[in-house]
Image 1 (cartoon, rainbow, N blue to C red):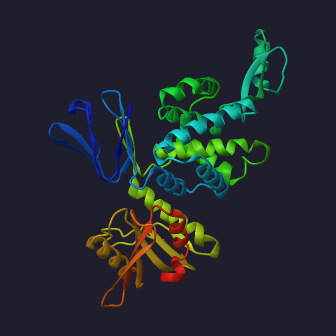
Image 2: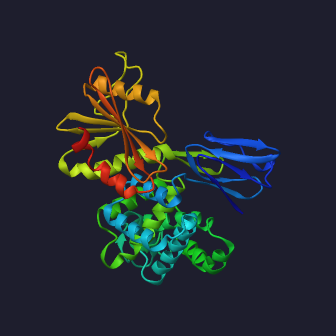
Image 3: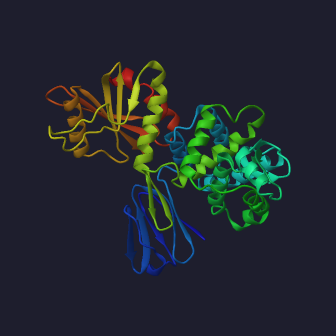
Length: 397
């Protein structure tokens, strides 16, 4: 049974008892009221297996559809794949609560299409032995075998096709995670796809490396043209693996078999990638921190690393920090320190607007004429948020 809790609020879980709850990681609190258990998650989303066999799913406070877009952008996936994602969302998603099921189902349907056509295969160099060479001969080994009068003395190497390649391994890993998101009805009519795929294609032993190879494949245009049917499957696989924490080594929290994402880290990466996409072609450099380590004190203590630094021709123009919450006085002190150390007068604190559908802005000025803006980006209208992020230099630098 899948139980759902929402990030940022207490969700009461009837019929559960304390012995059903595993050790909880940082960011999740347990409440007890009149014998009933409640769970409060702050800054984390994902899944936790309960000790009674159920699965607890923590839903993002901005909604699953919007969070998946955030996650997709945060992973920095290429534009051609983004178009595939946009088409999928606009066509498939009607109910925010069902997004996990829709993505999982569509992945299996895409896998069935791949198997019905022509799955990608690689080439592997295989060592063979026989009476005659059918490939590149191993002269030394063959000579020794002939001298020793061994049966089938010829040793040679041939290139053979193999399904054991990064794309198929990534799809296998995503399919295993997708399977747990489907209900019994889906299991009954999709089981043949799941079983046939995993019987035919191997799992990954290094998923991080395989994901990087797939990303390079998209960047190089490997999945276009007549093999374009891999596009959709790999896009869905990256969404599923990303929402399971894979590909986010910094943001992933693992406690036993729990897979949780740090939402603040996803939000920060999302902002940086959107801003970089908007300005990189104009010669701006968008990075976390800045070139060369900068510290608060001369002995190197307390390194200063803004979340987003925008520079051009070696000169810092604008500094921004991402806060997945309402900014505090400490956040303002931190930003003022960044500005002072770097000798600039303007900084941004970028935060989510969880309730409104517009960009909200608050301006603060200091006696030394530094200006800091709190900018609240609408999480219910990410298209507007991204359009605004593409104007930061013109408005604030």
